[in-house]
Length: 396
Image 1 (tube, rainbow, N blue to C red):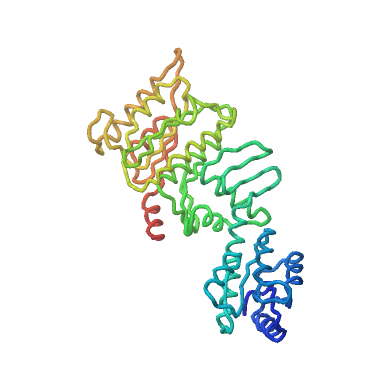
Image 2: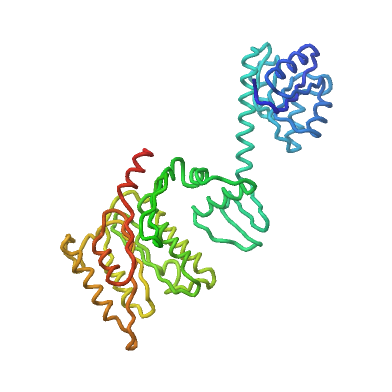
C-alpha cells in the first residue's frame, strides 16, 4: 500500500480508463479525484492542494500539455505525470519542456505506473523537505536564515559559531517538542556522538561516570572545558586567552585576534566574543596528535599585572623544556617548582599578587601541571585520553 494521505488528481477523457485509474490508485492508499476535461482540472488545481496530477495529453477542451503550461505560468509546482498514447520523442521533449515531470506512454504496465507514482511522490517529499529546510525560521522576535546562516533578534544580528548556529537551528525547528539529548547530539554533532561520557566534577573533586560515553576529540573536550569556565565567571572579570600548540594543530591563536587586550566580561557581549573565539580553535579540523610549547604564554600571564587566576589546559605533554631542550620526566617537578617560586614572589606595587593556577590535562597524567596547581592553591583536572580514543574507535 502507498502512503495514506497523498492526494492525486487524475485527468482523462476516457471514462472507463479514468474510473480504472482512480480505483487502482485508491487501492494503493491514495486519495484520488477524477476529471474528464482540462477546465475542471485547472479549477481544482487552483482551489485544492494535490501531491500529484496524472494528465492525459488529449482532452476535449484544451490539451494536458496546455494545462501543464498554465499551471507553471501561474507558479503552481504540483508534480505532473503525463499518461498518453503519444510516444514520439519530439512530443516527449515538448512535454518535459512545458513543465511535465514524468512521462509514461499508453498502453502502460500497471506496476510501472504505480512505481512512477511512488517515485514522484517521494521526490516531491524530498523537495518539500528541502524547501522547508531553507525557509527562514521565526520564533518570537528571533529570526534564523538557514541559507545565509544568519540570526537576528529584534532585528539585531547575533554572531554565532558554526556549531552554535546548528544547535540553535535544530532547537528552533523543534520548538514545540522536547528533544532528548541523543537527538540533539546526533543532529548537531553527528551520528554516534554522545554514546558515552566521563567528566570531572570540581565541586566533588572526583570523576563522575554516567552510563554513556562522549565521543569528543581532544580539542573538543578542551573547548568544552574552556567554554564552561567562561560561562561561569562573574561579570566584570577581565580575561585574556592565548592558544598554543605544535604545528600539527595549525591553530595557534592569540586573544588579540578576537579582541584587543583583556576583555571585561559583561561589557558589549565580550563573554559571547570570548566563547566564539574559543570555538574557532577547532576550525582547522584537527586530526593529528601533537605536543605543546606553553612557556611564553605562561610567562605572559605571570608578568601581567591584572591577572590573578590562570587556567592552563593541555592535550599533550610539552615538546621542549623551558630552556629549549628536550622534555623529559625529570623536568616535571623542577618546572612546577620554578613557577611556584616565581608565583610566591609575585608582587606589583609592593603588594603580593600570587596567582591561582588551575590546570587541565587531556591525555596522560601530567605531574608538572598537578604539582603546579597544588603549589598555587588551584585544582588539577585530568580527562582520560584512553576513554576518548576508545570512543573514537567505537564509531569507526
